[in-house]
Length: 342
Image (tube, rainbow, N blue to C red; front, side, top):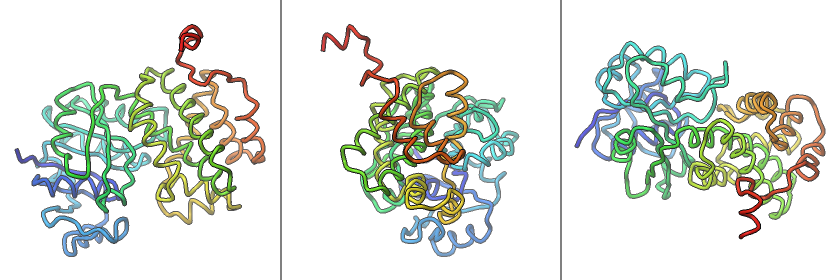
């Protein structure tokens, strides 16, 4: 069945999703503010700013007409950076109808308050057909045709099935999960630890150290998320461990590059300026550490990175926080009795 879809945002991930759906025979419009970018895509079939080596499907239509794009679509993917997400959602609310499906692909928090992107979507008063898409999804690899898995999460089974139908392809497979909060928190939190891993790699640490950092990162992520109602098992899947591995080991990850730059002796400001794209992990770090302190959650890596980036602490304090902290259980969601019986 052919569907009409709108992707909001002209970045790399929104573009690869729009391209997949256009290849699948759906009517796809991609909205963006930049008129030059719109013209380039429609005339040349390229989004040269984000995916210069990836020709786009001829049926993919770029547009700057937000009203037309929303009104003519039955599904809206919101692929807007977190800093602009709320404003764009407010702009489209008068254009929504009860049967429209909204799916966020943005990994982060509202910069104004501790709020996930799906929470912003749910504040609209018209439709509650809402989902999130997250996973180890480096856009340039997807565009190059590398096999990729992702996760769509929603409390509404019909929303999950619909997203899978839109996006399924020989190289892009979407799995489903009902734990929206867990999937979304995993996608946001891992950006913090990608910075830590990039920093560690710049210091030329060994593989033992990298595996320890990633594993303890997963423990911190799940500890935080479970406190806010997530299912810890979600973190064993693509949205959790899968996304963590991808972003903590690849120079294609903006957050990894932030950490690598800092580990190479650059300031945070210099690194962010050189990347030229949003690195969600920096804003996420501020938000998460504040919430962790408020709820007395033990997160030594996040806390150490925060002190390093924002308070001028020495690198040794970050390393020391991991090696001398209070935590002793490896898998903390197993009780003592369960551990003894293993």
